[in-house]
Length: 284
Image (cartoon, rainbow, N blue to C red; front, top):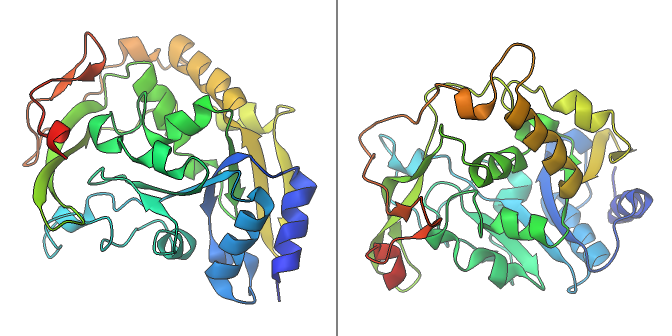
């Protein structure tokens, strides 16, 4: 049985200290058994960071509410996440803020929680000013708990911040039900028609894991890995710039966003990298 103290010891072994901004991807099942379940894992991380730090988790729905049989809208206080038990427990806890991106909202707790999540509906999904990009800019790190780098959302931050043409800039529109009861139109990215051979193809994983920037430990049966996003950025950005293993650099890739039933003209001013003044997002 894994206890809260076991988790705290693992966090301290990795060097996680009060005040850190930390993104966590996780699998509760990876531990075996945890005394107190997902709440114990979350509370241990919060205790290690203290309220002076910030804890962020994905609370994505990956478009499920907008598929057949779905609710037809995203609501930050209602829509479950498809990211697992720990994230789905986290966004429901007191003091946690959740952003308004209709398909890829983030949840955060701590000192910068509100700042990280408040304007997500007015940015690119993973671009400049998005929750994860702000955490990265603050010197944040990523902790993988029982999962591997295939779930590393940060690769998309590098892609959107460097102008990857395969991700539509706010080109999918979906209903968002706000806490005050209003229903508005939210925007998210247009997902790419094919997998990226460089990032989705895991070509940066060996470079990151083989570097000195990764720290690893095991808690119960759960393997953990901690790395700074600054180091991860350098590796992924170089791969996108130069290409690898016969695949072209991002600027020469022919993969483009999917055009589907939710595709709309972008409300993003690409030339000036900002939201257009007539976007509905300014009204909420």
